[in-house]
Image 1 (spheres, helix red, strand yellow):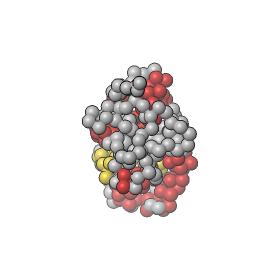
Image 2 (cartoon, one colour):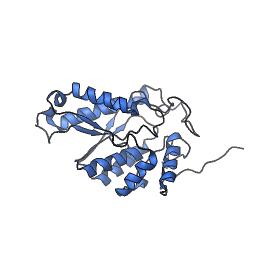
Image 3 (cartoon, helix red, strand yellow):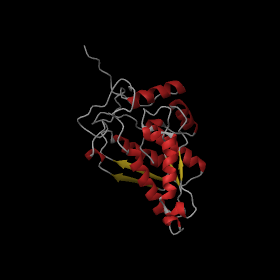
Image 4 (cartoon, one colour):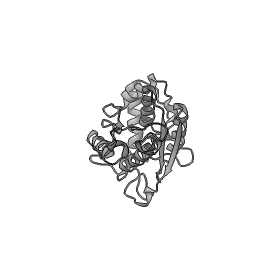
Length: 234
């Protein structure tokens, strides 16, 4: 599952270096930060994936998030307590369901009729620097794994579906250090929730930008991100 962000790119490197043949899945879901899809294409090329698909889902029609609704501003200056307004309702559940469906299709519904068994899904969630999203928690990922094995031909045929979350207990500095060791150029990734609509430059002030900046600083690695100049009021 490839968003084009820092975490999913690093997760892709882990999957590649583990020896998996990669099929990358990204989503155009009405997000205001759709520049991430260009980053996803760059990361997919870097990883040398066998196939990269971008699925169109209009989550903006449901509303409820600053990432998909034009009349809700993206918060700036740091996250508050609780689940932030940048949470997109049920997003990871929807995305994982698509990934599960494609995995079954690639694997010939678990009967070996496709391009080989496909029972492994990688997602770059982490519960340390995760902005408070409930669908990034270890217990949620474990619950979805159980669902996957109840709801698929592969699962009931004894070929267990696995949801890999290699970054889930890592902070951003640890994730960045891991990626750098594997030769990942983070300049090809995109994390900002509210980029400039024309240039794609990161705002530097949203939760995602703040967490990303802090991660590079704590890792002692130069941040390659192009940030917009921050203008202060009177």
